[in-house]
Image 1: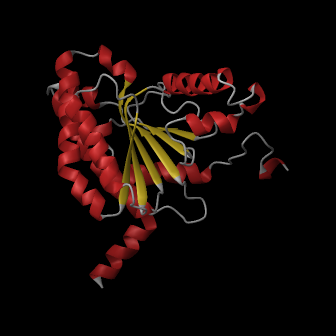
Image 2: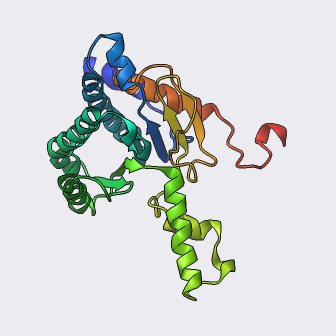
Length: 254
């Protein structure tokens, strides 16, 4: 009876089937402020942030989310102190080495987006290993945006298409929204239905700005290290109550 009651309680917290988002993207913000509140070094906040990322992956898997994208390190984060950047690299190393086998066994495909030029060689090797080992998994996809910037991604896509036009491989009229989307690093993935940002900040910060054109945005006041299953479920419940119109007239106004 106790086990059945626990299962019923879990189901009551799970998102409903009809409005479940296929792709959830999360801006993991507030590690440093979480640490500062506790008079801890910023590195402690980033370490706890990794634990929150593990919880998010587990919850997304439980909720049946097809794609979960986590914003780990932006191209603008290079402006941070060198020690903090090294700490972030170290956490990525630890995450891949510790979690890769488990994620592989659970059928989760790993995809890393972002610019790889300029990253330490061992980080690039870990990224490639994670992608290769999980390439054939199909239960869900975990996308990690690392050294990523949305504007740079669009520029690279546009430059690639312009080179094709200059070489005669494409005509100017061939450059469509679909053509650009195919040149983005998220090609083949559904666009985010829901973007969550923690820490109370209310902006995208150059994260998936093309792909999130019609995403629902949910901003949480809590810092990322405190993010848990219940907050994830609450954000999805908010999404489920939204009327997604994609530029058309909603059902309530029809």
